[in-house]
Image 1 (tube, helix red, strand yellow):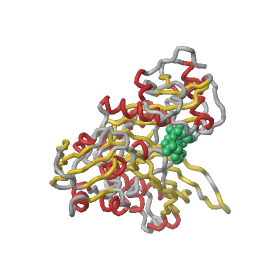
Image 2: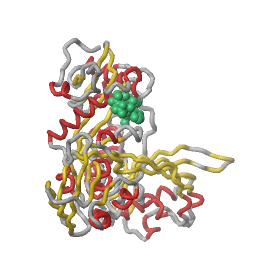
Image 3: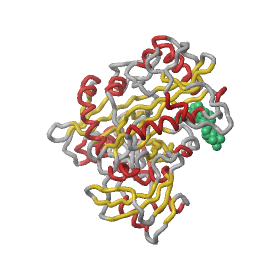
Image 4: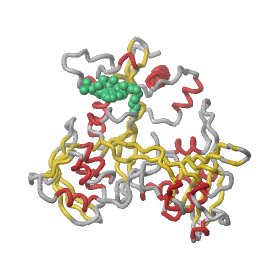
Length: 441
Ligand SMILES: CC(C)(COP(=O)(O)OP(=O)(O)OC[C@H]1O[C@@H](n2cnc3c(N)ncnc32)[C@H](O)[C@@H]1OP(=O)(O)O)[C@@H](O)C(=O)NCCC(=O)NCCS
């Protein structure tokens, strides 16, 4: 359990608490202390309603490979009652630049300590530090819609899951699921986990630059995904990997899946679960989807979390064979440096826009002049009158291409201060495909 000598962060005491309320227990950095870390893991389990754990092997499994330098806990009477961690991440903006993100995760407060302002203390401190460090945005995956807007986050990349009834898809039974069935010149073969561990990271680096909303995958991610590292309590099935290579033999796509075997009345009705499918071109994505959906014995394909504009339906002769099983806000983004954020992406056309950004925490608000072009942009504070006024959360969705200015305006989340500014914003900010974040963190 926690020793008496906490590693107190000096700036934490400056974090706001509720007026007139007790500042509450101390926030401690837990990264360098094995006992604090063990209690911190137990705190996460409590906050996420998991059964008590505590097996030392499980704890060390969980911690290995994790950047704990910004892991924080709140301790009360020897228990860790609130947890929070942030780490460095890269997030792809429209146009392919990766911006520095403060990725927030492991957010829990035990049920005994909720609604006393602990999350607010942890979050405001972390966001202020990230802003001072020079991060452009903060990111998180929200468990519930109503938690994070108050801290300036907004939904920025939604996720869609689909189930495909392959018998209804209308594929020609003479087809083999090979790329040539689609008139493509590449080929598909199985790859073993060691090969995926070797070539996957480089393939993913090319992939993520093409997809706004994509985040980087570190070595630990690949070790876990390919089974090099396996947590002691992980009994999930090992995926199979399919590699799509182009006509020159260069890997351009990777699909990983598991299959649940089911037979109904003597007929195969296996469920194929897609764990990951990435491609560096629409051809690669289509070839892999086509292959997975044309597999003998596979009656249903569960796509896992895809971007809302995923091309999976385009390979189905009968597109109604795909049914959306879930669609929700997934990745939330919080602007930390508005000018840097708007400079980081490309725009559809040349133009200017003055945006007034309201920030609930006073970190990145102000009035900014954006001078945009397809090649890049300039953005700086300005005294010119605003064309649009919006809050940081709305800006996040517009910036990444999740939402149009027209829709934000219709929802009452954006004020048009100059006539025609909403249409002008959409002409500048429009993207061909909505963003997609493929990974949970
Ligand atoms: C979500 C959670 C971390 C909030 O922690 P907390 O310490 O209770 O939050 P705070 O006391 O700082 O609350 C700040 C504000 O957010 C509101 N809020 C907190 N959680 C909320 C929720 N789930 N839904 C709606 N509002 C919520 C509070 O009412 C409070 O509002 P106020 O300032 O207007 O009074 C905590 O409830 C929890 O651990 N939940 C289960 C695990 C979880 O969902 N984690 C998030 C993973 S992404």
